[in-house]
Length: 380
View 1: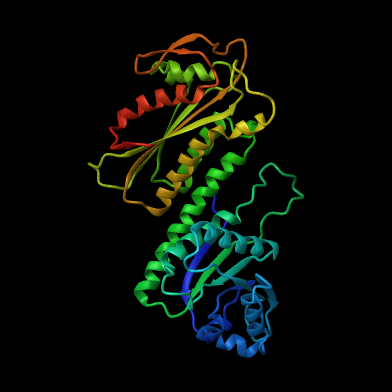
View 2: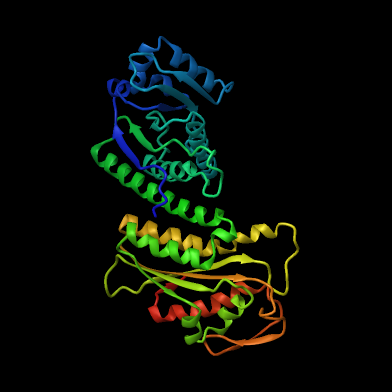
């Protein structure tokens, strides 16, 4: 299962005449102090009889941040959104917030597609390639809405496609921008995959469910090599530390391995080790009740690895990476590990467990020992 929201994100050069022919539900125009003089907007300003011009002035005056306009008959777009863009030297988080705001407006307008005209009048400090990558990543990520467990009456997000429009880019610069959009879109898709696993409630995201979802990646990404270890495999490998965490749960542990080989055959891989505690009560050393529901997020390390590996495959990245998803539930029961118990890890070291809420290091230490089999250059 792929986790892409926007089926496509494209990038193209346009001139004043081209802009009038762009068929889209929502044409978005970035506004700054020099936008009124932009050559690519002359045709639109002429047809709208100063409506666009006056709207740009209103935004630049600071009285409005964005303005929706119905497109006139001679414009192919159905609606127009003018929105104030951040200063070229604005902090990165403000740029991210800006693109998130745009996607929020696209969703509220119930647009099925959108076209974003990136300003040609921004200062020379503006890196259009960087901005295209960040915008593509943010548009895809912000388009995501979790509705997997919601009632069927909840309407899904309507937006399915987007495009970037530029004016006056050289062929070489346009190629760089298109590559940046592709990169940003793929990273955004991986972020959505991670968020989806994190958003699922614990009873919809057990170790075995993550195992099934991991194996399902093979359909969309055949370049990935995927394998799984069950509790018997973990016992055979003498992962006593890892198994001690899962003892109290009726849900058996699972450790998934995702291998991606896009680099040279003799190049050592990077290994990513993701903690996947699908619900962490703390075990016998139980956590306080308030906010315990949030401990479904103790598997977000594994979810991050899940998203990263599919992004590498999507981009056909020239690297060798192995991802380990180390999954278990930490629950109290008559079988659960007790404070003071001593277990033996895969490396042969004995560990006295004084607090069963220290489960992360107990599963990760065995996973780190296991990662040595891949002879990694780095482990993250």
